Image 1 (cartoon, helix red, strand yellow):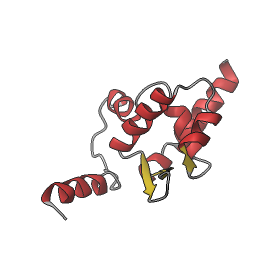
Image 2 (cartoon, rainbow, N blue to C red; image 1 turned 120 degrees about the vertical axis):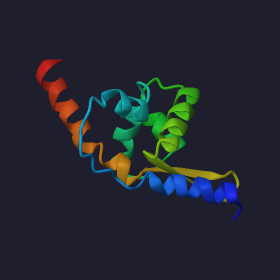
Image 3 (spheres, rainbow, N blue to C red; image 1 turned 90 degrees about the vertical axis):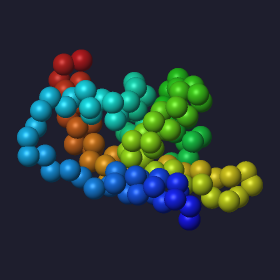
Length: 120
């Protein structure tokens, strides 16, 4: 394993270690930077039901373009919210699943759903 691969692996592993803040400052902006754009919540919602492939995600999220889905998946993977696994088949099989960091968003999404049911 090269030094670059080792650094990347360590960075990925650090995404799985939750922080225990001693002081909570206004970090809504930080959370939104990690979660990303408008499609992220829908991708996370779909992955809460288990591992999915690209086509499944695209079918289940109405009107998302392949480019938007690809960009969203890459952003969430780079931020440690989901994990991408590629299998050496022809064509390559790629699956996505939530990391513990991504699973931790379940409570927040549930609260958003309850808020929408109450006010929308």
